[in-house]
Image (cartoon, helix red, strand yellow):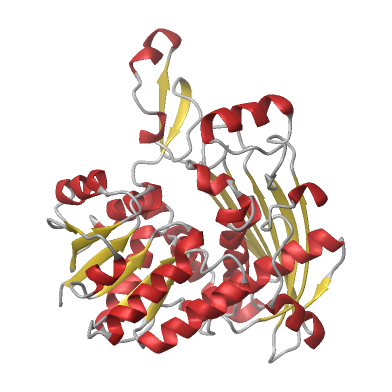
Length: 412
């Protein structure tokens, strides 16, 4: 197996999480890093993980000449700029074997079309990173239910939720930079998972046709004065002037183009889950069978009493977005593997070595952006968005949600 030389764009939380996933694989060497601020801490993490001795480059364009694969793990607002730099490097002779983009592909369809156009110009295979589709617990459940689905028919209802107490970094809270609030941040996960679970086996991830979206968004916790003040103090983001939603829920209806059967995917996301930490809750209902997954069900628990709590250095060592360091704590020993990060990287590695796209490519990421924009439009207008209407689709092409434009107070 050929070892692929990775260049990572971004030095924050998700880049570090992906390094933990890459450390569980073979055939990857991280040879380059670049970020808005010098990613020296990430470089140390790469070395400690045994993934290489990366060079820190001043720009994406410079790094592109020294790597096989470019992985975009940087903030959402920089997607088009980073793809532009890759395209410039390719024009100047850089040879790229693959491009990875962490979700979302872009903040809106205007930017997503630019990303797609640049990817077409670059000509390299692509992998859109949506980790939850790759989770072993979902893949194993679908495999176990395969023969049942053959006999009874595919799932007809999927429900997916992702919740935690809020993002790590200030730009995630800023709707103009991130692209919105929790619907943009985590809703894209649930939209993708629901679509995937409902898709009949052996069909492509885009087989089912989205026909309508309905959604509701709200600012429930982080709009209260106490929490607004905390957010302003800790992150420098003022939700009294420029708010984003901290709760979103909705439904997407899909049509099977072969049978004309309609199926539905429900999603719920929030930044106010003040329990153990990040929770992924996913279930699917079919005729006579079902599946259910809960990421907080762990075979490992620990207990830390009041007198011992002062010795805990980092609550997140055991669970992402953990909000407590004492009491009965749920522990996930291998979160990158649990959440599908390891398997999405394995998929990209094998695909790029074969000269092909990953299971999910940039075109798939574009469709997830479309569904996200449709959800925002539905919430703004308090109506169902018809994705079979050509006029609506044309409007979505140029649509930028009010929340993304810094006018969230008109919606929330």
